[in-house]
Image (cartoon, rainbow, N blue to C red):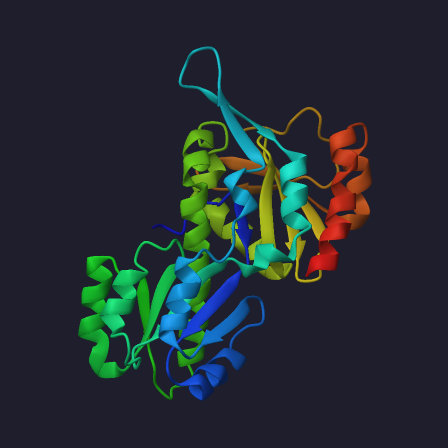
Length: 294
């Protein structure tokens, strides 16, 4: 899937390592960025049972941005469900969701392909760690759709960077697929959701602010962003023209297929933004509660 779709949510969830060599996998895990949560299974059958039993019954089954048909047409409108998002944020379990499974090609029992086929339809992304002479096998597995990517193990300094990039990309793809039904219906009113330039820009903001999770909370164009310390930001977007309700302060623009205007508020600036609405006044309170579960 293209990386140029902005998901309606993203959480730096769990990366599962599966293989026979626990010490080697532990060494790899320690060299990776701390933004994800990591878990190692040195018994592949145990990992398979863990994945197949359902590792996290997400609140996402009742999304905080709900849709409903109206006027007997195909049009859809969306509204924000604060209670559902509050339940999601105030649960440590949101980080237990396995977004990527990294499988070492050296596993012996069950065979590598048997394991990949058994977990093929688990929603998490599958990434192989392979030796240089296994590239052909990995390409075949990608083509068959039983894995989503691979990284060659070697002693080069760039190997960890390649692995980190692959994990981050696949985790992002995981949430893109979850978000696609909503994004596809919102693109007419929110064209930036699939605009290459804007998605790149948004990702850079998340990198600069050390954002580990974000949520679309306003179908008019508003995202809640939380950094690694659960400090909240509110990112407000508009396309075409500046909304008349916006004050002249803190307005910036970015060019893509058209000009998009945005405002970014940190925690100290949020109260004036949310005043006047009971729903939004509770916004900061459940952001604060979310910090207790990081």
